[in-house]
Structures are given as structure tokens and as C-alpha cells.
Image (tube, rainbow over all chains, first blue to last red):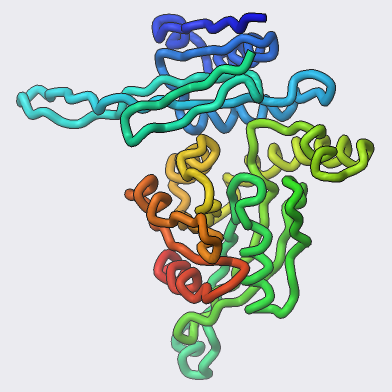
Length: 117
Length: 201
């Protein structure tokens, strides 16, 4: 048995509303796929995703999701005066069917994800 | 009116709602019970080693006396927030199948109810089990959502009475937040009252 992972680029999710994004994610994860979003979910989006997940749990099938966020480097951006400022962190989010992945963080930099097929 | 209150010594009363959030089995109800026992002499609800014991919001009104000012707190013990609910886990922990199924069904509704109620709390506590790794996604989601809504919040690194507890790791993970370490089950929780007092001012 194999697991499929979909890498979803930012150029795709940027055109989706919050609800569309959540429905898109859930449809795929409920079909046993792992999603990796180039543009990570905000905490408010993640909480809405949790709510929608709860509405879709069926006790002989879909039992929920695993969410893993990978924090990347802080982006430095300069303003018009040429002053460099730290902007939001870049991050990616992985969403998988419950029990299919687990993550272990090694120190502050490396995250190891174990897949269960 | 304030003059009359001063004259007759009437105590000022301030009201606020305090939501206790966190993942299942972090010790939310144990903490709520501890506060309620301290302040009104009764517990808020039962606790259990099986997750999702609290599946509806439990409320108790308590009063904190802060230098003569009364703070009336609606203490709200929330169902645990989780990304998954599987009745088979409850069966493995000894529940009969029909009870496990009902518990799972009620647990999903409880998670939704707790999330919806986030917009109605004035102050929040996020309870984290300090014997587990603190960077569990659900902790970050709860803390991030409280921050996004501008709700003042306290992170409680709980269960410090246990040998595996690493409250320093919780403090390190949430270094930009107010984190206090305590055991809701054993030990002093005065630090919690002092922190609430500072935040309500």
C-alpha cells in the first residue's frame, strides 16, 4: 500500500477563500492523501479546519487529521528608506489523515516526519 | 456614584469570563476544580484518565478579592480541543463500545462548542501538560488564536509534580507569552491568582 502526498503551491491557495481552502484540504485528506501547503495555514485557519474536521468525523471511517507546521526562516524585507525589518516567518503546513504521520522535532531546526502506510 | 461607594465602603465589583482551554487530558478540569474548591468550595466537574471527559462547557462563578476589589469570574471549563476523535481509543481504555461511540460523538460537538466560545471569553488559560512535548500543534493553534483575537492569556505548564515534567521547555517554546508552572493536583496555585490579578488590572 502506498500513501500519496500532494504538494500545493502558494500560487494555487492564494486564489482560494478560507472556506474553499479548508474544503479543498478536507476532501483530499478524507480520501487518504497527505497535503503539503507551501503557504502554511494561519492559526485562525487551522482552528476552522479543526471545526470542519469534527463535523466530518465518521466513526467507521474518517477519524480526524494530523497537522504539522514547519517554521522556516524569518524573512528580512527592506522598506522605502532601505531599513531592513523582520517580517513574518515563512512556514509550511502538512495535513494528513489521523494516525498516518507523526513528527519529532530535533532541536530547533530539523523536523522528522514518520509516515505510516 | 463612586463618591457614594467610597463613603459607604461598597466594594467595587468587576466581572470577567475566564476560559480554560487546552488539549484533552492536560488538566483543565483539575485546574478548574482546584480554583472552584478554593473559592466556592465545590468542584466544576469530574476528571478521568480517558480523554474527552468534559464534553460540554462547565461553568462556575467565583469571586477573587483583589486588594478590596471583587473580581467576579465566570470560570469556563472547556472541552479539550483535538484534531481527531476515535472511539476505538476509548474502547482500548476500557469503555464498552456503545459508551465509547457516544463519548466520541459528544466529544466532536464539544470541540466545536469550545472553539465557537473563544469569541466570548475576556481572559483565557491554556493548560499544557508539561510531561509532554509542548510544541504539539494544538497548543500553538489555541495560543495563536487567542493572540489573533487580542484575548489576554496565561499559559499554565501543568503537572509539575510528575518526574517527567519539563516546564522550562514550555517556557522556552512560548517565550513571548506569560507562562506559569504549577501542579493543579498538588501544590500551591497562588501564582495563578497573582497572574490573573495582574492581567485584569
